[in-house]
Image (cartoon, rainbow, N blue to C red; front, side, top):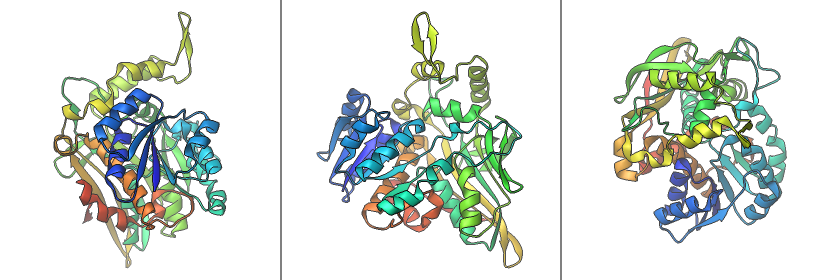
Length: 402
């Protein structure tokens, strides 16, 4: 099969490398806005299967031409381009997978009900048309979202009735030599954390304010008991509908919380207060520039920080409910050590944990083990094939009964 990995940052480099090493793909094209960066990744992977092509993710026409003849496009660019990329896939008749969608499309205020539905449903509306075209569109199949959704499905499958689904992302990692250095896209981090956080409760999708509901969660595998906050994230948009209604398990409440240290909270709050999170261009002494792009430009490139990263991360799903008339629940998670991951794979645990599941999705699709057509979230796929492949790439899946 032939794949294009669209985006050559930290996550894209992992996905491209794994696909290039697989038997299922004989050609892996690096779709890069910055060709020089793409060439550096091509040299790093050092595999005859890999080539570079300049791609403008905002230009549907040029992408359509570039996608023709491919079997699948693996999208890891900023989610605001997803609709354009999916449109090009439709026109080129190419399958699609990504690791996130544009949750920023929703402008619901804290305390309000989201109407008519969260942004994910704009993508999921394509399901019927893609089925008719015989195309597969896998949404949000990274780590979280992605493995977190599959872990929620694993817990739900063991219960008769689901009450709560709680996605928890813990990381005590840090980057040596930097006071503030995100290990994934700074633009995405700032956007997600400052936005009101989606949750599901009382039969509706709703919004908390940013940085609400701080609590301490005791993460396993060396991460420890650390503060977590509600943050806007993809899982809370789809799990209540697809596990609760489509799979018929029910769901009374669902949210997402991530670990954020005090220095991160203070820094991101200040960025918001100063208006530096604004994605719209403004005039600065005759130059049009988006403040968020400036922040992104002055922060270190996450793809160049892996060797300086230390600490552990653990991402999982708590699913509480009822089994045989009794309260029951499961916590299912994956964990990685940043330094050990770098030493073995020359990638940070953050990039590795997102890029690997996306590559696994591509490999399983190529093997014919993902047969679904249409557009769907991760929880609509069988978890077992993914879990079975994780150890091959140094990842794990653990579960405990609550």
